[in-house]
Image (cartoon, rainbow, N blue to C red):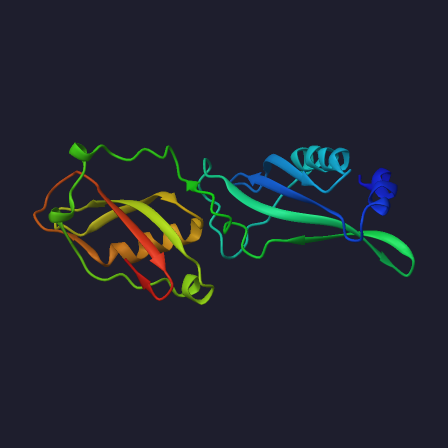
Length: 205
């Protein structure tokens, strides 16, 4: 697909490349593509974006949770032309953590209950949350919003992510932590509680 552009690449500086910002749905299908080509490579960038949207598929990374159909996930691929044994060839590299580009992940309908329809901080007791191990090991920073509902005894009955600043998986891990750390003071109460937490290196707050 890039073969027609070999001469164009060859005329560029060594390792001239095209950065692609791909939007991928929960099934791994490429649903959007923006190319950031090097000088003179706009046509090649358009060609690879067209191919990516027609045939692009991603397999889930172990660190990602691609199970909300309306969430969008961003990754970056860099393509460049190098040489091996005198023959030109295209090489590619991908971002190690596709979601760490400071673009928000929005879950479901992304609706946050109005203040008069949700519980307040004084309505719950929150124990310290443990920084999810995998995120801590990889130094993942994130701002997460999740929505909790409670059973008749005041224990969390459900938790769903609403928003995450960078990482889908960390949003689900926040829900797992919140289920053991948040309790309703005066049950029963059908209103949800929206927990906002900023995970920063070494601590959650």
